[in-house]
Amino acid sequence: MAQLWGGRFTKETDQLVYNFNASISFDQKFYKEDITGSIAHVKMLAKQGILTEEEGKQIEKTLGEILAEVESGSLEISPKYEDIHSFVEATLIDRLGDVGKKLHTGRSRNDQVALDMRMYTRNQVKETDGLLKELLETILKIMKENTETIMPGFTHLQKAQPITLAHHMGAYFEMFKRDRGRMHDIYERMNYCPLGSGALAGTTYPLDREYTASLLDFYGPTLNSMDGVSDRDYLIEFLNALSIIMMHLSRFSEEIIIWNSNEYQFVEIDDAYSTGSSIMPQKKNPDIAELVRGKTGRVYGALMSLLTTMKGIPLAYNKDMQEDKELSFDAMDTAKGCIALFNGMLATLSFKKENMRLSANNGFTNATDAADYLVKHGVPFRDAHGIVGRLVLYCIDKNCAIDDLSLEELKSISPVFEEDLYDAISMETCVNTRLTIGAPSKASMDKVISLNEAYLEKN
Ligand code: ARG
Image (cartoon, rainbow, N blue to C red):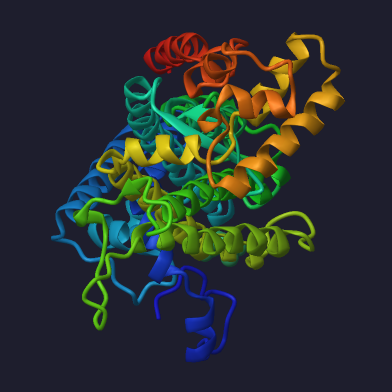
């Protein structure tokens, strides 16, 4: 047991209590942020004359050494300390004696941990954004290669209208683009420095909070010290954004699982991203996609957990807030891992274009266009809908597509049909006459692709 606060106690802490209270097993994850934050604090203390220049230099140098040693593995973070803050301060005091004891002047662990967690999360936001960008690049590549790859679009998991693979992929591009937008928003809102908030009420030392904020790349200091130590909104926002990312990945995974099934055979997952069965030799399972889908629940769990932890906490700091870490770290690692793996799986996925095309041909995906053909020839839409409905029934009976019928058969159902119907309801016509922006035609998709290309260049 190694604590910073024994003075007013007459008894040792019970070992179980100590263990229950300690956080070093998980808060050592932000040793770097803790030491960097301390270096900024000490620079500011020296600049303000709260420490002498010499004291400031000595502490800064030793903190730098501690960081380098932890980083290289030559200094082990000992679990005998209560938390990472105690470990760093105690190591400093070991090396510098009384001078080391001055580091914590004008600071509390409350603003210290608020700073550490914020810096750690800020970095995670950036890393997540970088991974999302890589995923977007993979998606855009697939889009570029597949503006003419016809496939069925679905509603209710029933074939609906023909689209292209570029168009389908484009839907996910928009989702992950919004996810990046959320990363940006969170960063902008969270990037204010809580250091200097003290325990809750600031301090009596003449701290320069603007200075520490700028040393640590924040836009400025937080403007209320009670909020500074007890705000975890940014973390809730990040967990929320991670949950939305996981929801998107999970939907995409679900589609890949369906497309990879024996019944669909739209895609084949690369061997490197599939696993086998211990009993059934023929199996090649989409485990990675299933795991991504499965891990979504874990990330949602972290969000629910933190929302619940925070809901009853009176101002300002309370120890409940220590619970902000473990599940958040897990959610961050899980989401980042999932984005990276999913990206690898997608980049190596092979698309069975003939099967997609065949499936679009065989599912009456051009029925809407057949009705539109009649409308263009003067039939009211509701009547056209009925005529094509009967046409579909006739085809189901004959086990064929609308385009397989002879003109005679077509005319027996409606005399309005002429030879040009075949062209009007070909898959290519169905797709390429949908010309509005956002629609699947090659012309529309080419525009969207170049807009998204410009977006990736800029962001
Ligand atoms: N381990 C604590 C946490 O994560 C650090 C802050 C401790 N502050 C205190 N007043 N006990 O929240």
